[in-house]
Amino acid sequence: MEVKPGYKQTEVDVIPEDWNLEYVENLAYITTGGKNTQDRVEDGLYPFFVRSQNIERINSYSFDGEAVLTAGDGVGTGKVFHYINGKFDVHQRVYRISDFKEGINGFFFYLYFSSHFYNRIMQMTAKSSVDSVRRDMIARMQIPLPPTLAEQEAIAGALSDADALIESLEQIIAKKRLVKQGAMQRLLSPPEPTPIDNGELKMENGDNSQLSIVHSQLNLRLPGFSGEWEEKRLGQIGTFLKGSGVSREQSQSGKIPCVRYGEIYTHHEYFIKSFNSWISHDVAATATRLQHGDILFAGSGETKEEIGKCVAFVDDIEAYAGGDIVILRTENVDPLYLGYYLNTAPIIRQKASRGQGDAIVHISGTSLSEIQGLFPSLSEQTAIAAILSDMDAEIAALEEKLAKARQVKQGMMQELLTGRIRLV
Image 1 (cartoon, rainbow, N blue to C red):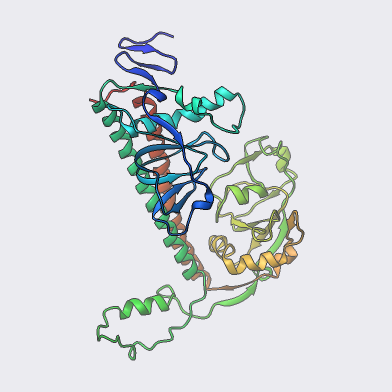
Image 2 (tube, rainbow, N blue to C red):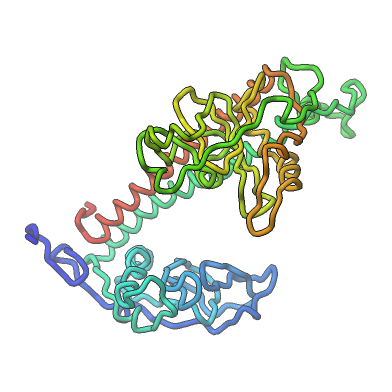
């Protein structure tokens, strides 16, 4: 392969001519911890790093400074799981790389080491899993280094900024999910009458500024709606039918969308947004065609707690259901509302109580038809579903932005840590 001017081919990669390769043992001190899990305590003063990214607490520390940690054995063996700067201790089977020599930026070292060490071990052992890491596996790994500390710091700073953006998006998504979870708990439960008369409620300090907030938290009804929620069995809001078997081989046999029961657990949340399986016209001829408004329940599962997980089909396209799916063909209800409501805790408990079997749990349309729920009017169902789906859309947009940020960071690492792009 031709190397462009200003670069050179090395054992690890093509790097700039003024970059050097150095063994880890020449850049830092490598040792293992001396503590065991019996030394951990609740509410300890210092972090205690155990294998596979577990962080406990401990009341002593053996090191105060900058270090990179990697698991020596067990789950996550060879995966670099932490960069830390402070007082801490580590388990006896965790390697600590520290005391970086002058002219080495520890975070730059971490970025390269963490992105290459595991693959190095896989190549050295020529197998898919590693029992343990030897010290020499770390010591004899080569790291490409920019010629100046300033360039290392610039690269580390750019990638640290990318990390900060990713962390910020992760935190926002977590908060949005909590808000949505709270909204589901409030909106999908029948409103309780406010037990307090506004005219009688007085704050002890005489400040009634929070009165409307207290009242709004007690009265959980959406504005503009009234009337009692009606109790119904699922058998009263539609009819049940079964999907037809679609094998794994058939699931990629054509271009017609299909849902298989396992995908209800792994791919879909509350309603079907996209498809993983695509069948041929011949397979579709023996499968069950879906209609707008169908609710698809997983008829089989591994535990009673998850049995009957369901999703709503809210499109008007040709699509089919595979076997082990129980379909509720609804009438006069909002299917999107059902996609949310029929996955709430009160309904999950009813489904769990009707599941049959131990190793593999099953639930039938007959059993599902007896599940009872409380339903607002159709217009209120639609309003509630719109609020929750808007929240889902906002979270999905943030997750797409997060995925792009991670891709950008990965690309930056590939370019900056090998010098393909030099920072000015």
